[in-house]
Each structure stands twice: as C-alpha cells, then as structure tokens.
Image (tube, rainbow, N blue to C red; front, side, top):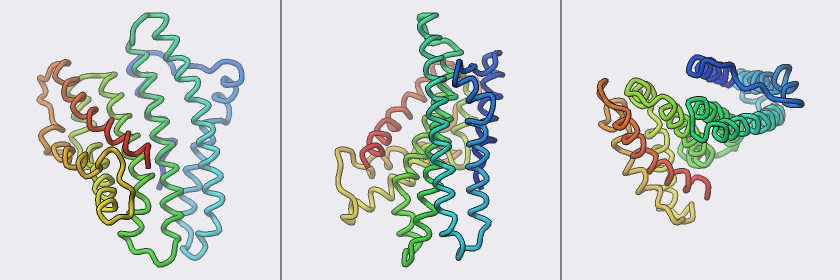
Length: 260
C-alpha cells in the first residue's frame, strides 16, 4: 500500500518544526497550484490508485494498469512543478545570505523527499506491470524490477543524507541509519542483483561494477552494522565525516543507476 501523501505531510511538518517557518508559498500560478488541488490531490490519487490496484483480483488487475500509470504520471507532473518552487526558493535563500543556511538545507530536504516519492511511485507502476507478465518466476521478476528499485533506493538514500545534513546530530543519523532496513542495504540488494545479471550476461558491463559497490556497502547493511551507528556524544564533525563516507558509495550507486 502506498502512503505518498502521508510521507509528504510528515516531511512538511518536520520542515516547519526545523525551520520555524511555513513551507514556501508559490507565487502566481504555483500559489493556486499548491493551495488547491495540484500536489495534494495528485498524491491522494496515486495512493488511491495503488491501493485499488492491490485490492483487485489478479485476473482484473490488467484492466487497471492504465489508470495506475495515468495517476502516477499526474503525480510526476505535480512533483516536478513544485520542485521548481522549492529549488527557486533554495537558490534565493542561498543568494540572499551568501551561505547554505538552515532554511536552505531544509528546502533541499523537501526536494529530496519529493524526488524519492516520485521514484517510488514510478517503481510501483513498473513492478506491478512486471508481475503481470506471464511465465516469470520470482527471481526473474526481481531482476526485471531492479532498475526502478535501485533508482528508488538511491533516491531514498539521498533524502536520508539531506536530512542528516540539515540536522547533523548523532540522533538524526541513528534515526535514519540504525534501522532494520537502512539506506545502504536497500541499495546493496539491488546492486547484488545487477552484479549477478552482469555475470550471467543479462546486463551490459558499464564503467562501474555494481558488485564492487555492493561489497563496499556491507558495513552499512544492518542496524547493527558498524557504520550505521554513532555514539550519542558524537560531534557534528564526526557525524558529517561518517555521512561523507556513505555519500562516496551513494554517488557511485547513483552513477550506475543513471546509466541503466
């Protein structure tokens, strides 16, 4: 079940709590877009489309694929429009203060969260279409889903990085990385799949080896993995240093994902 609207509402609430200001108000057309239907209605519609699809009998699901694609395409357009607003606000904030302020960083968090929601919605469509293909086993389905699953995992990891950059404390880091299915594990699972497909000749070799990146993500694999935990007295510099270590691998994963 999708929960795109809940995820966005949670992001907006955190933004308000962190910055002490309301989310940026779009001007002109975008003001109308935000305050009425636009993004909120697109999120609701996408949530409903996924939920309706998943509740439908498998035999009837092929009839709903078109509607699901339509609602997710609408969501993508709405997200892209509002991303323009957030990016413009962030640029103005940086220019006005000649620095990446707290508000700037939290605007970047909102942008990253919307991008993550979009990639997850696109994966929701693609994965359901693949599951309708006849004659595919579970391993074959997972292999075909890898591309959009990896994009979604990378986007969520970027959002986690932006959140810690906005609040560089050990508590913020542990909240996002010291979990049962941390960002590094989500990416690693898909890169292992990609590596296996390269080995089997099902994927073309690119300039980055997915199996190599996957192996380097092992210290980021679980809630007890050494790199996913920081002591409560860790300093800001220590938090950011640990984050940079993860970002190095994330950049490689993103580079690979964008070439697929």
